[in-house]
Image (cartoon, rainbow, N blue to C red; front, side, top):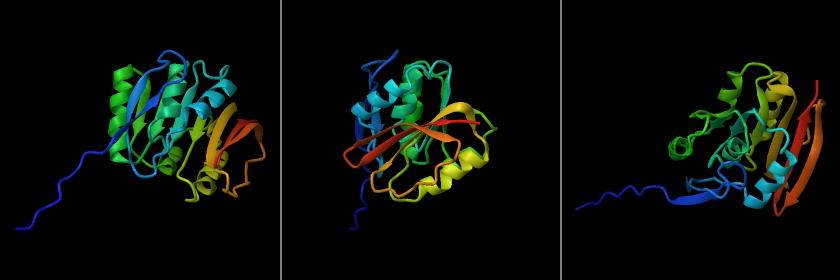
Length: 194
């Protein structure tokens, strides 16, 4: 008799909201392939950099995964966050977490490129870009943001990538505001000019 393998539910981990309204709240996240939640230490640094920019901001969390960056932004006063993710288990968990927090966000079960193609110019105040490493995502996403003028003037772009990532074609009107290396990860925060 042939046995069919049983489908195992995805493993569940947790992320923690570091500051703001839901400070200290732990939320479940699925343990999906390639999912790399931003460590608390890095989140704390990033949101210290952005602390005066979050009030009423329109935020997009590309490659959202656990949604840790978008949820942190909402906890600290962002008006709305879009979570863009293709993994079905991660999308389901994001919906559950937004509902449990009563958060003002929307989950888009689509790829980053499709999401950006549907945006209006100047419609994003803060965007978090934390793609899977070594997959060429920055080469595809950064030009779309720039050519589509999707970022609000004086908006913010956070990019998390591997220290080995050789991407350097940042748009001329993006001014590097802060940069930090933690282990093998490079974090950069840009401000978008005219």
